[in-house]
Image 1 (tube, rainbow, N blue to C red):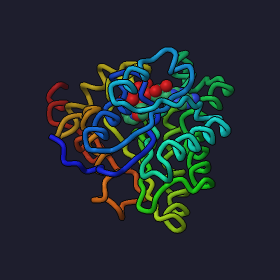
Image 2 (cartoon, helix red, strand yellow):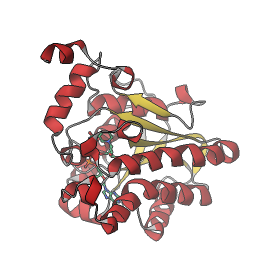
Image 3 (spheres, rainbow, N blue to C red):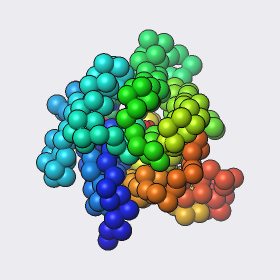
Image 4 (cartoon, rainbow, N blue to C red):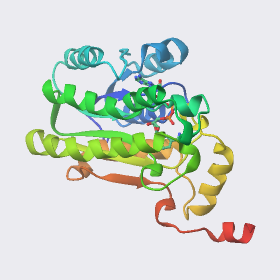
Length: 268
Ligand SMILES: NC(=O)c1ccc[n+]([C@@H]2O[C@H](COP(=O)([O-])OP(=O)(O)OC[C@H]3O[C@@H](n4cnc5c(N)ncnc54)[C@H](O)[C@@H]3O)[C@@H](O)[C@H]2O)c1
């Protein structure tokens, strides 16, 4: 059931790879709530993923951009300004990748070239994107920018590897740039710290299935699904959250504030 929460709002969605992607669910829900979107992903993901199918389904353009490349980001943002015939209202950064995770290099034995690459994709890309949006003055007042993160930024989860450090950096950018975007553009920036979710990026983390069960049993409300994450993102894009900014918002069924679930104690 649509509430038309995003009627007359337009924006950019990064990171829809396939129908498991959180960004895919966000794209579908934003459209259902009356918003207009442009989809974007890295050129390689356009070739390998199914984003063009989503673009057709939602009648939305797909513009490729490697989020680590400033000139591709500039072309994308200019393309969005042209397509929307002016400024737009929301942006989702739903991007993450660690070569150390993917190639099973332990945290204590990283290949630091891979670490730099993963940091560029997963964390610095957010600053690059924000800087391009800021310089091009691309967002309407009371616009909203959201990036996705994970609680490994605050607490240690051994298998999350260098992504933990990337997420800590990403969350810090949301606060630091959030100040300037708030002060000078009246635009808000937040990160959503999502439950573990079965997606391509999520499945890269070793032992994800066991971990999903552990997380499910720890969280009083259970894990949040990708669709529920999309609902939360839509609320942050809507006018009902205009004064929420520079926050890391846990969307995790209560995981972040639970010490241990009763079922887990009983399992022992
Ligand atoms: N799945 C989980 O358990 C979980 C939990 C919390 C947070 N998150 C975060 O949610 C976000 C989305 O991940 P997902 O789980 O939907 O997985 P996903 O694999 O579907 O999405 C990751 C996306 O990043 C894109 N990407 C990679 N390199 C890029 C580049 N250079 N330029 C542009 N895009 C690039 C990929 O093409 C892909 O679309 C990520 O930030 C992830 O860390 C995921």
